[in-house]
Length: 594
Ligand SMILES: Cc1cc2nc3c(=O)[nH]c(=O)nc-3n(C[C@H](O)[C@H](O)[C@H](O)COP(=O)(O)OP(=O)(O)OC[C@H]3O[C@@H](n4cnc5c(N)ncnc54)[C@H](O)[C@@H]3O)c2cc1C
Image (cartoon, rainbow, N blue to C red; front, side, top):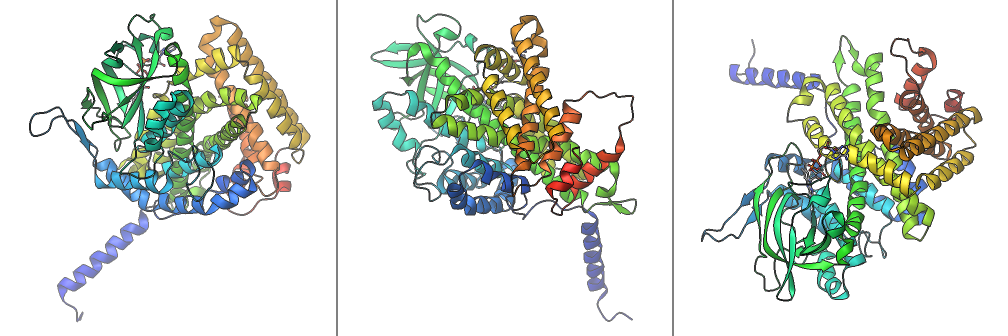
């Protein structure tokens, strides 16, 4: 007879049952260090950063990796469930609008703006123990780690960073002196965060349609209009485009303004957040609609250069969006791998099934491509900042390439990772549902896929000829990758020439505009394949990156006959090697490239 009380034994069996239940449910990545488990990132950072900077920042990558898999992830989960709330008036009926955020969001802000100081790290020394600004590669690698936990807050972080860039570059000395000490501060009591309001009802892609008017009244600029999409709606200073009275229609008549939320005497500026958007994703972050009722603003730079100046911010944001997509894809891959290696079905762990392994490849390949692409783009930015004109041209084309393709790829990757988790992936307790929602924003803000593809082909290729220095650098990297068999590199070289030729033809013949996305995708894929080949050839890097290059050539750039069986032999070996957790030698890899 069981000496224990019936109640106790019932409890015990309940515990056993629930444990049994937990055994069956595949875990997630909670508690993992997102830097430690990211072989690709750990291998590539020493290639794209100087040894000195890498060794000084490595502990911070590790620390943020730990945070992203731990506390930040918990906070992000809670913040999403408690979205910001707009209070349009105070209790006296005054239009003192303000937004309430959940404490979890505030804690994430303290980590991002106070501890890490993302917004300031590429503008001044003194962040993360560095005596000088961080290189772009380091900043974007840190963004990549952060966003694996929290996507929403990266908008305010990035747009503050990019607003500082515009103010530093274009504002008058007086305006810089007024704004920069606040914007660059790491002290929340002093700090001013930035944002960018461009889109109006009449025009998002077509910014020339902007209707906001700027009137010069009593010695100051006043703004009148209605901004339709305003993320980080309650930022302390917004950069926006408006048309000074009498300026021409279209983009030529747009000027850039900086609009403070509070005036010097502390009173509210004459604009109101009328409504917050009820969004599919980025739910932790407030995007609103803003009514400008004669708001005071400073003119930034030259009145007829507004859009040109603003495009610097747009391009910086586009790069960050590409990084964010790369990051969310990495989270998807990590989640999918954990599930694949633990979930049982039909008596086997699901990673053993060939069809599932193929699905894993489909989500891993674009993730690895985006990783190489963003690190390469960021290193071009570092070289451009040091005065390298060719790197500046390359950055011109790499930025929209990354934004266009990585953001687009993020959507099927997020859906694919959800599917690997099965039904649980659709349930809000797991991160997949959020990843699916957030993935869709990348193809909308800072230019839709069409707008970015047109920018790549018509402007970066057609007007700026930016593909030429890119092609030259990629050819050089192929030469340097001499450890990789020549036939494989020759095939890549040929594909590179063809992709460049395709882009030139589409750019040259206006009637081919409908093929801009195809041509842009080809440029992205071939660039990533060359990069991964070169990376694989570097000592100390996972040689398997060359196998990803092979998959890109075959599946993204090669002709596929949907009615033909694929040659399975070497394809299976490639997948086998890519999914194996052991170290793989360059010799093993090169055998599969021949
Ligand atoms: C959550 C969220 C937050 C946002 N935050 C901000 C913000 O903080 N600040 C800000 O300024 N904006 C913001 N935006 C706005 C965003 O940048 C715009 O929605 C985007 O640029 C698209 O503009 P639109 O919505 O007017 O679409 P449209 O320009 O009307 O586009 C509709 C469709 O037409 C296509 N299209 C347009 N022109 C062409 C063409 N020439 N050739 C082929 N196809 C074309 C587009 O690709 C798209 O598919 C935000 C948007 C969202 C969803």
